[in-house]
Image (tube, rainbow, N blue to C red):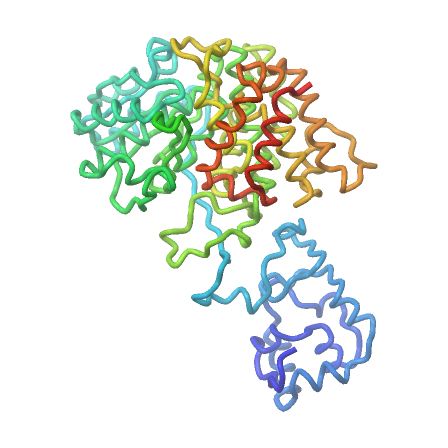
Length: 540
């Protein structure tokens, strides 16, 4: 308790044992209407308190208070003081899980020496959803005054209905465009640079990306570097591989048209690629990269092969699980000296939690249907929206170990050819590379936030009524294994060409992924990563 602190204002009261003070002043228990609200007291109470306590100090009030049920109520509070103190069992909508109890009032000030962050912010692209909504894109670009548009896609999609619909819309609105269909599925630094060179030559004033995450991420990079023609490629790439410079210049408008239901790239400021010199995935992360508009047309997902739908759905699943179980934003270090340097991936937070939980529920209900029946428009449409929901969540909260470990899995692929993908190079699709480690990862992270792992397992269909907190990791891991077995997922890393003697290389490829792995709710080292990869060699 502070010493000799006169209670002369509402702000003084915020630093006291509030309930005991009120009881002492009024000499009776408070009614439910007199307990403090989340953010303020009524003006009449402020006047009463200030008048009655002007010459009193906190120590006198606190010392003279009997050890009563009100003291116990302070110590075991179930009422949220939000910006005032840290309740142990806060039940308000914003902090209904103990994972987000925040720091106390004094810590929530903004000293220059603060080590962890104290705030989070939400950012997302504008999203337009509806069957056939792609036909509006030409009008959007005309309204923007675009006179030279770059349309990016990949060779497989170039002749399919999603691209045709977009080009017809541009033609109908009289918008000039050029098409780049050289996007590589699972892009590399080399394929990014090819797209950037095309964008620089074209001197475009707007971009449209039609495809999955590979297309949208490539288009983001082309927009970034053509708008910063003097920048070196590694300037904006995430540290430690790149320099991690902040993007301060303006980019051109970019409309993203997702044709898969997984990456959520239409909502985020992240572009991922394989950095071939290190055989590891990395990326560029900046809110400046977010598309101006995401056009989510569920008709486009009807052309996805079943295995592509499955692997895309696994990405949604892990986006939701990882963002929901990520390190809380107020425990992420360092605290940025300027909001410009607050990362896009900030840690789990009450708003991202809402999107993550909802995305999980949709995945649990619709993913199997979307994989089994390409004509199931309801399931395909629901998964398309789930990708958006999870994208908004993880685009602000971030992901952690599943994604961090997936990058070397995809980057070091040897001979594996994935069903449903028409490519001429070995490929472990991103969603598959992420989900293969999920059972091991969530078994490992559960001790940091067992309630969240149990809730996730329950959403995915497990009966957790009698499961102990200590068994939360095993419960979620078993639930995931059953879920993946029903969807005929390959039996671990061994089934996609990896052996135990590959593990050291996989660990080395994970270490540079600090941007995401540092958001794991549980601290880990190289030995932990070794054990997680080993446990992921076989799933069933």
